[in-house]
Image (cartoon, rainbow, N blue to C red; front, top):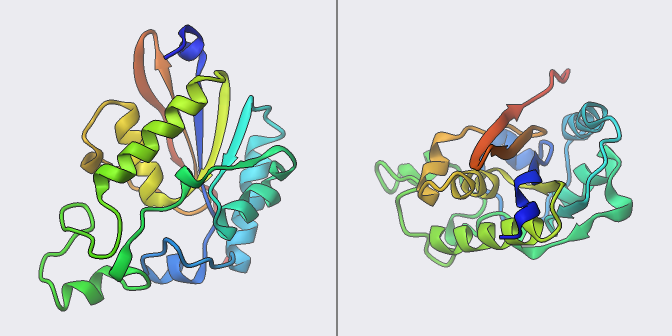
Length: 198
């Protein structure tokens, strides 16, 4: 990575709530809009960022991430990057963990194969691509994306196995920051969320 990378900060912004995220349904390719609550949390994200300047703003191609980016005030110079898309859940798309476990006891996205979808190794490769792209720019980089993808990216950033992303809870409409302490990659802020009225 370029030497200037030690100045790199990755600001991870998870999109606001959708109907499926509120009900616990796995959502990757389905292009759902934000709920009214999700729109309010995106506005709160914008207020928290308070016009923070970024050297690069990247967003997932999905509507929910792009709308969060727009409402937060960063769409005018955001670039869509397909690598920021959510983990492709294949046949599990639109299903809750409870529904899947009624057929497959003890199932977890973190440890089971994903029929018709994407391997966790492939998601980790996409995360590495995002880190490399951000590192080529340096400074503060904003990433508007999705829960599972950002959790895997955080694990990859601190050089843990991708499956360690299971240890990082991440709410909708949240902000996290990855950076450096001296030469070590660290998590500086995690899952900073905002009180939003229902």
